[in-house]
Image (cartoon, rainbow, N blue to C red; front, top):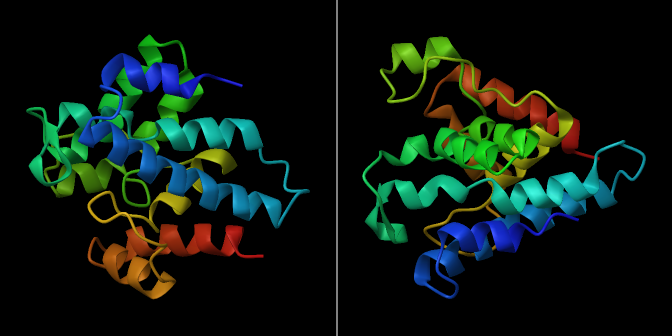
Length: 180
């Protein structure tokens, strides 16, 4: 199994507030995803990859400016996915890198990026593989600003509905895929 802690520690100081928050959030996402796999052992989902990718999906947050969660970089927070992709591609982890880029919201289309004038590269950033979809789905239930139990599905749907019908429809499709 990949040593994701070693990779995280290239960019984060062990036991710093940001490191502890990243690890706690990522572990919640990874454990939630493992529970879904456990309830569908014949799904063909690559369990080890999902755990690693869940632990690394937010690796780019340190490059963003989000003081409430101890991020002191200079990029807008919405950029953390593609910034994480860049980091993990350099680390030689192209599949893990795509999970980073594709987990924002319920994914983003190039049309949504352009229409909302988001500070992101103009390309589709949609979860495609079952593993990408699972990490994206699991991530929606947990906040980095408040480490607590999983949000109720109604809260997740309400949050995503604010970003439009397409965002909610993508989430609902993932929910149907992972509800056993």
